[in-house]
Structure formats: C-alpha cells, structure tokens
Length: 273
Image (cartoon, rainbow, N blue to C red):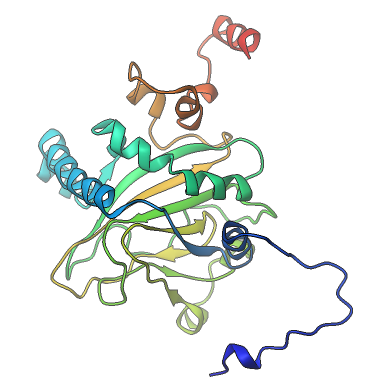
C-alpha cells in the first residue's frame, strides 16, 4: 500500500482548489466528498460518564413505559425513540453540541432542524434493526449537490471492528441506486471512533451497523438534522410542549416550523415572523 509520501503534491491546469483554515472545514469537505467523517465533540470525560449513565436509566424508563414484549414485537427493543423526552436537559444539550452545530452550518444551506434523536444499542452476538444497509432518507433514490440532511451518531462506547462499528459506502450519496453486492464487498469501509466522538454522515450515504462479536453492548445516540422541508420522525414540539427551552433550542427542535392547523394560526405566524 502506498504511503502519503508517494502522493503527488504538484498540479497543473487547476483553476480552483478547496483551501481551509481550520479542522471543521476539513471535516465538512470530507463529508461533502466522501459522505462521512469523524469529529470530536469536546465533551469532557465527566460529562460523557453522565450521559452514559443517563442513557442506561432512560432505557430502563423506556422499557417500563412501553413494555419489553411490545418493543420486541415491533423490532424496537434496541432503540430509544426521542430520549430527550425523558431527560430533556442531558439529551438536548447533546443535540445542541457547539462543535456539531458549527459543522452543520457548514454543511446544510440555510435553516436546519433536529428531525429525530434516537438511542441505539448494538447487542452482543445478535442482529438488530440498524444492521442492514439503508439511507437515513429511506426509499429515496435521488442525489443533491448540497446535503439536505446530516446524521450525527454520538458514540457512547468505542466503535471498533470487533463490536460492529458502522459500515459506509463512500460517495454513495452521489449516486441514486444501491450498488451491486460485488461493489459493496470491494468498497465498504468500517468506521472506528472513540467514546465522545461523532460519526458524521450525509443522510444519503448508504450505511449499516456491523455485527457485535464482543460480550458488551455498543451504545450510541443518533441525531438526524434536516432542512425544515422534511417532517420530523416524531413531533418534537408536541413532545416537549411546556418545557423550559431557549429561543435557539426551540428553533432547532422545530417549533418555528410546525404546520399551522388553521388559517388563523397561519396568519398569526406570518405576522409574528
């Protein structure tokens, strides 16, 4: 395999080249070109420990509220839908991570909202509902010259080859169709990441969770941010109605982009906005 020292650095006939001054720009370039990247959250080890413990207690509360048998039947036993509903302070803080929001502003043109937040558990030596190739805009076969949505997977545990870290198909966000099995076998990459890092994906990049060969769960909190055009997976304004939220938090959570259910509310919204 060639090393970096063999890569040519000279060029000719080039009129335009991307040049950046900071690490976030370089991460944004990789997401735009390859469809994925890994970035640090700058969350402290102490805060990471708090999030980890909160994840576990939230999962227990989720099982109690919705019932283990019901979740198994719905193939939802390894997912916590909208954990910010149960622990809004911790999980909204994670969804509004400063480093992440700065990156999103470089990737998504104009306004964006949190479309969904889900806790994900990859169980040891079992299949789970994220262990299949998919896009985060499922059933869609189109390409866009700018990201319409970004997936930010926060790693609570180490993402390793052994515990089934995320597979990606680089540049697949630029091609409409899902590739052949031969292409997948030749070009799929497995991303590794440390606890406290985000795995960033263009929502049109095909990806899949891997098989966890260890004896321990691999946990993460997934976030999907989209332009307001897309409906939220679950209405976050309805879930969080009455909670104490800042103006910026309300905008990110979609409060400003709810569909008015009457002409009166539409006109009132227009006059305020």
